[in-house]
Length: 501
Image (cartoon, rainbow, N blue to C red; front, side, top):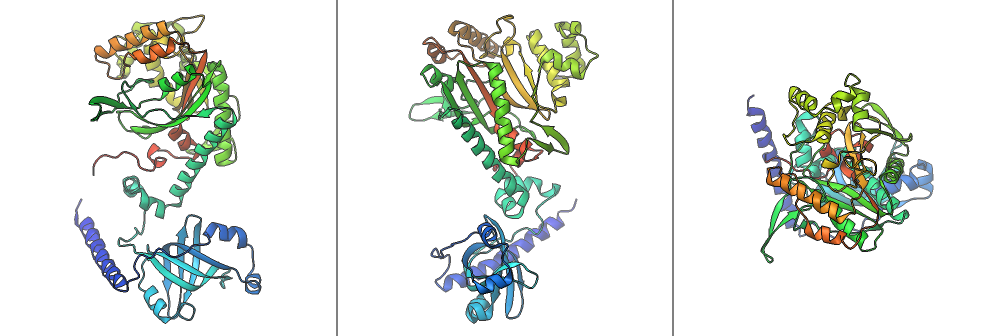
């Protein structure tokens, strides 16, 4: 493909920037550039809420004076009068700027202002002949100069990466992006309110750890100069939160940022948001009930409904979530597999080899079953489904089942084919935890970079006594993806990680 169109576009933009810098120099010469004394009294959304139903006759009989400010998005300059549309946090609003209203000198300056400039204006509301609510400006001022032009079109596949790299432009130009991130804020607030209303205490735990713990993942490393020690960015807050339960905080939660030195995909970002909560004298069945109710609450707060469409397919959070074991799930969606096959480690290895699915030589039966589930079944779990009773060998922090020591009291919640939450009855036996950490340490020594370290400080905390406890982590980014109908995790993270340009 020829580079000529891109070179021409860059030359055009450079020419526009040069023209705008010349206008900025003229503005500076007046001694009035970048003022900070304009008092905005109204936002567009508020104006429409209070006065959007008033007729032109009502506004004329009882004038409403407003002062507004925002970015110029549209501009129609005529002879002695012009129309401008500005955008602010509440939406868009039309301004009517006339020479007789603002004065000849201001109007002459106004005509040289550009799309993207930020202006402040004051005047009375009226209705145009097309019945659009508009501000008849008695005053208008340039508050900030946009030196770079806004893109004429800012959507579609060609601009997708630019949206992520230049989120500020995406938010200026794309109403859907603004709506998604406003919804994200409502979802996070609804979760925080729900947890506090149910007696949980919000806490903050360290983001730099001497030992990365609470999950199996490859960490980011850093160095603390004053302490002269290696530290790790948090992969999970779990161990610190459980120390708080040991300390007597029986219901705690944290909305936190986690960092995992892993690949990127439409549902993975190396920096992501989780909500983790822990409750003393609880267990994983109770956690599943609570998590269901929490997600329904978030859907109602974000969408006003518990049923909605995601990527063109219906989702219903109002019905009880299905609960299946790994084997039950595999057989439900692949009934040609038999229980005997799924219980045969040799057969599982051959099957995974044939699928070219990743698995390691030292994997036990449970880990092989999980690998087959991830390869064949996980993507089929569209309706909300809990996969329960995971193998203990891959759940080093979860309590073993009373009836079967090879099974952990653990669940993962899947919706639309992706994991949304992970929870379990916590392992509170310090000797069993020490043995599990040792097994993880041996795996790490054997080359498993995602295996856990032995955390002697956490084992010591457990030796003071952790009550029976249940804990759960919910992926906020993936939940927001569901509730905003977003296909890519980068669409719900304001500033996702990107490869260098």
